[in-house]
Image (cartoon, rainbow, N blue to C red; front, side, top):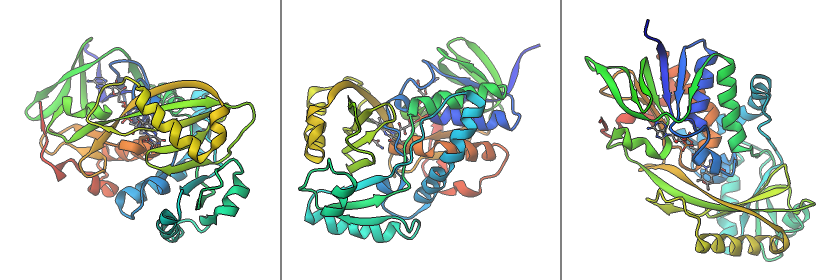
Length: 369
Ligand code: FAD
Ligand code: GLY
């Protein structure tokens, strides 16, 4: 008898594995197909920040989704430890969104007023106060927004933990298996053609990050390359995440490594790390925290963010092809958004779409290849 699955998930990044975990937990018969290995792409390259307030500066459906997802990490880290045995290294030591000059200070102070509507502990620190909290910061810094409840995780461990917890609940995972096309019958999906044969299923979830329009023609998802480097320190020089702007942040990890990122190069799938990219990050990081100059060099890496035209992810069913669902386009916040994405897609497959109208696919007109 041919083997058939309720749901096949394409893509073993943080979103595909989170969806697999949530569906398997609901008792669904799930298979996840990954063309390389689990966490091979963006979900390995991320800094792991849960930076809802630093990354998103306006209220709206995406901001509210991000706040909700951010709050899920404390209990999720315990749940994933229980079911996978993997510690996702959730650290909640706060973040400083830096105003490097007096000109920018006013903008950041406006952000403090806006963000305090959702978290009263967020506050402005002036140049003196910010150095009391983080003495290694440059004395030239004008001040910053302090977000004491912000945190970060180890992105690759998070992805592996979702995958292992999905296996715990009976999911199947096939690595080195590329999905090539879909099998339909009367406008409804019936299965997938893969590099390792046919998979029969009733529903498909496409969670392939920046590669989404290779499976769904015309879906406007495009790559934004990001390069990073890290240094190691014997004793911590910073405790909080230092976020200057979207092109420079420093994240002190639990193992003594400080991740420093990241460049933003649009329309590039090229994963080469360039001296120019890393030089620009070093220059900015040393300006913020001069001691970085004397830290021990650790490594460089690069990843491809999945961006969309309007900055919002696509989470929803395909408007024409019943049974094909999409969860992609999480751009700079896929790690942060992964817990809520898993939960909402699992609900969506049971017919509940309440929180997802802003993320529907038919805000554009994609067609399946
Ligand atoms: P991916 O992780 O890219 O996974 C997609 C998977 O699909 C890949 O493994 C790929 O091999 C597979 N695939 C593709 N096509 C097929 C196919 N046809 N068949 C089978 N498999 C296929 N986000 C945060 O929240 N916080 C951060 O601090 C942060 N920092 C970042 C720093 C950098 C430098 C970068 C590049 C990104 C960062 N991000 C961050 C963004 C985050 O990494 C992404 O939004 C997230 O990882 C996207 O996850 P995904 O599962 O959607 O896609
Ligand atoms: N969220 C950090 C980045 O995408 O670089």
